[in-house]
Image (cartoon, rainbow, N blue to C red; front, side, top):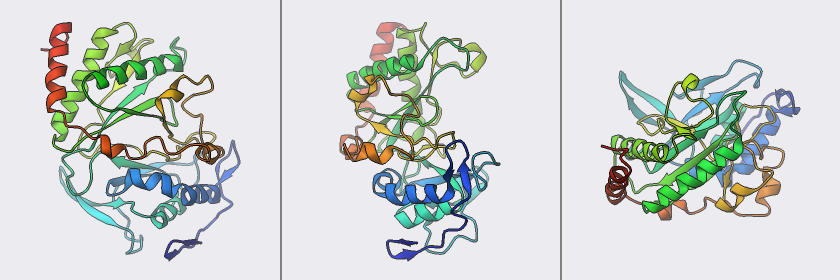
Length: 308
């Protein structure tokens, strides 16, 4: 298979990776080849954790952070520090790398919120909006409502939020940052913003990490805003039935009656993209610092009596 300047061997193209939809490993490889132009701007220069399923989604999956010895030398990897040493982590800078790891059974690349040149200073802040578990009364409409309220708050603070389907259960909001703040400050800000929103809507929202205590409330998860934590890459396939794709949206799409977290997938993503550009294109131009928003957030919190 010719991918840019590389010629890659794709093995076992007919192996079924998504049995419910009959989607094969070859289909996955072809998707990432075709989607590279959409995905690469959102993953370039970021350390990647590979969510691998060599036998498809019904087989054993695992996260692979360090680059295996058998990967070819042209695959970019960078040294990243961890508590007990360091490892060499994958960086996806070209379509050939995407195709190669898909052939290795990587269904989902998960990326850092920072780049390799300044790993302690994220250029993205993320909020993961999770609905309650099975049997709860809350629906995806409640997730949409939460996304709108969070957007309003972030825009009040002078930030520019972007939204996407997770390809799993909920929605993710990403906020581009100017990389002045470190992870500790970014996570503290995200926690304060989530706490303020919960204080405004305590019956509908929660930051309670224990599922048993959330009830029917939407969970505002901000814990990925930390060093070496990852989030699903935009336009990445998820290891779920139907091969759904985490898909960036424009804000006016949030109200569509047919929208749900797995609305787009391998089977229909390119029909969508034939009709519209990437809604996240150029999001880096809207990067902001957190110094002034943090001051305003503290003031909002004091007015609401929710923050110290």
